[in-house]
Structures are given as structure tokens and as C-alpha cells.
Image (cartoon, one colour):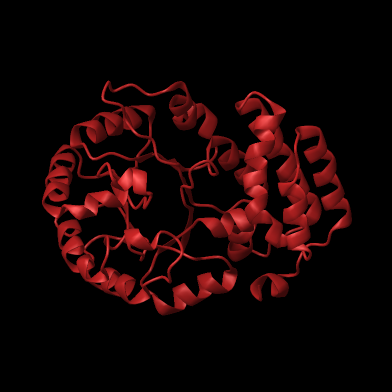
Length: 319
């Protein structure tokens, strides 16, 4: 089984990928948060830093494109191929209302005729390097049958299915029967994505779908950075390792975003997930949330790592 880290905007950027890979080995691919090509066909400085091969050394990273334009996708894809990437991912999954209203992300699923034309154009240009991350529809899972018919017309490198509708966002239950229909009817390799938070979730999906070859984990890897390391081996999370990971990531965020306070804001978002690792998770989360400046944050997190106990694997599983 291969294990991927999902693209989470504002979280799994370049700094996170590199520091995570250093402390928690085992990830087969990191998918980058989406990049949106501009009409002028230029990348921003931030985009260039994100996709630079020099800053993604030693790990497998996949750039993701968010667009409704075949021409814009092809331009960006060819740039990424020139940079040395062998897989380019099309975002057909983002459920954000602002994205969907522009016909991008899962908004592409509203007009399957236009979507089919877009795919025809980009696959006419490239038959080997395009993967897709998708939802199963907009309002009704019955839409997924027609969506799969469209996907089956093209040689997709890997179809990553998040079995929720656009209107579900991330809150409503996974529609596992829809995913089952997808994996049974797909002519392309399929990856499962959605609500994988523990090792038991992984084992359950592997048992239910023995033909599955890959799993993509999003929030689960942010809540527990050691999740994939523990699945693939006998890795046991130690507080000293978590603290070293945390401190190095804070330093990288500070460098990338040019101030300790900016770095702190990024780390506070990480703590909104990661506090679950501690027995007194609510107290930890509340303390971090109240931090007003980087000096206070540095002192507080030092106290948390010194004075608060990590959950056992059983305690994490029962949360």
C-alpha cells in the first residue's frame, strides 16, 4: 500500500513537507496545495518557491493545479514537467463556495459537457502524467455514475476519490458505497481519500477494498504527524521527536513568512489539529489559542512539551 499526504491549503506547504519528511519517514507522495495559473501565464514568487525542485529534494512532491481552463492547465503542466515533475494533479475536489462559484475545483462537476471538453483537450496534450483528485458530485451521489463515465474516457495516472459531495464540505459522513461503485467501475487506478484519522481507519479501508493500492491522508496526518510512520513500521511517537519537529517547523515558518509572529500564526493552525495528541487536549488547545505574540508562544509550547503527557495509541483511537 502507498500512502500520500493530501494537499491542505495553508498547512502542507513546502516548509511542512520538508520538516515532516525529516522526522516522520514513510510518505510515498506529498501533494502540494493547489496553484492557480494566472491569465498572464506567470507564477508568483511564492508559487515558484513552492514547486522548486531544490526545495523539494529527498521527497516525492506532486504539484496540483486549480483551474477551469484547459489552456491554463496545459501551460502550467508543461512548466512543471520542465521542472522535472512526472505527475501533475488536477483539482476537482475543492468544495469552497468561492472556488466553486468560479467553476473551479468541484465546481467543474456542475457542467460535465464542459468538463469533458477540458479533459479531452488536456489529455490530447499528455497521456501519461495527469492525475485527478475528485469529489463524487455536487448535490446527489447519483451524479457520480455520469462523472465516472467521463473519467473512464481518459488515461488518468491515478484517480483520487474523496467520496463526499461538494455541498458536504468536510462535515457530512463519507459516502462509502459511492466509493465502492467508483473503484469497481474505474478503468484507471484509484486512491481513497477521506476521514482517515487512525491506523485502524487505514486497516478498515484496506480490508474493505483489497484491490486498493493507495490511500491519501489529510487531517489525520496533521493531527498525528507520525501516523504514516506508525502504519509502515514500528515507529512510536516520542515527545522529544514531536518537540523537535515542532520547533524546526516554527523556525521554517518564521523564515518563510519573514517574522516570528507570522510563523506563530501558522503554528497555531497546526496546534488546532495537533492538540489532540495530548491527554489534556482541550486545555492545551485553549492555551495555544490565547497566545498573542511569538515570545509567549515559544515559552508556552516549551511548557506544554515539558509538562503535558502524550496520549497512548489506545487513547488516541478512542477519541
